[in-house]
Length: 152
Image (cartoon, rainbow, N blue to C red):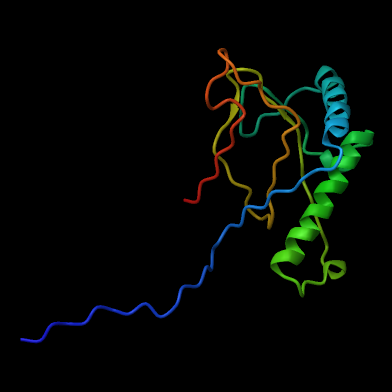
């Protein structure tokens, strides 16, 4: 009796890989202070919309159209980061020939609020920028301020 050979692995192709990129934001403290003030003003003047948020406040989906200086600075940083990410993974990409569309918003989650698992269908890149996270301590839950990425 002959023993069948096992299949031999020829190659692995990461067809559906999801890279995770981290960027360092220059002068983040000043940007965050400006964003906190602008977001507080928006929260006082604009109603929350409901998307993936459970509790908390969710702005309109207009981050890239806002006139506030810190919002505009963040939008430029994100646009630049998307260009850098694209060229890092696809060096031959012709960014000038691509029509970039962007959608962004602000979430403010008080204690007990969260964003439920969700996806962003139709978008090539997704990102998140934390302006402020809860301080660690006795009152903070171990998952406060955490983000979870799932590939399912």
